[in-house]
Image (cartoon, rainbow, N blue to C red; front, top):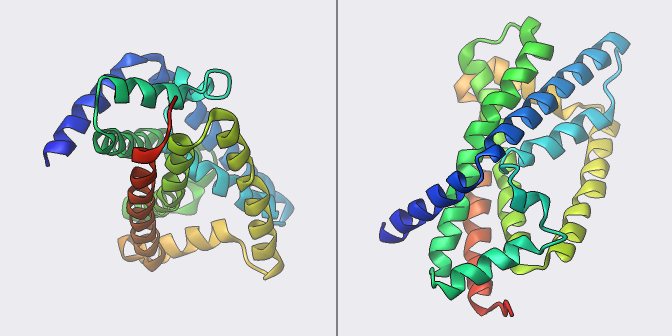
Length: 237
């Protein structure tokens, strides 16, 4: 509990350091949600569900775990994540506190970004779907659970690699997602519409929602523990 409180102090410091990150994050999520709605409308008008629609949302759900700060934009040029860890180790702030703070920041980002992303998606593309509030909340939580599932991997990449290597590892995610979305389409299904239909049918009792949240939080916990063990031994010089 003491480490969590210390991490909360660090989280507030990080979130207050760059005020513009709240604006950039909100604008990007409104745009991303709106584009998702436009894509959904276009697919329905053509009566064809492209696998790249699934790929788009598989990319965007994890992005909600980030606030678009100066550090996140310049991690390649400045290796900003390594610089951050070096500074905290020099103060010193324990690695466990830094890890807890990073998790707190991600969860806050998911709530904040999700408000703009899912609201924009609803206004542009899903208003006519007849969702009740609990059904749409189930849809949003399912997407959030999926996003959290990959957050542990992103933290692993941030904390244990240089900026350039982190970029390379992140780019590997692109072909994997495209291949998965194509396989889903070849199986005669559409992941995004399956998510919508399940959320509408089950509401907050949606089995996909609960499975997504459980898998996401479990993966975040496991990868955070693994990252923390390796972070203690990482040479930051």
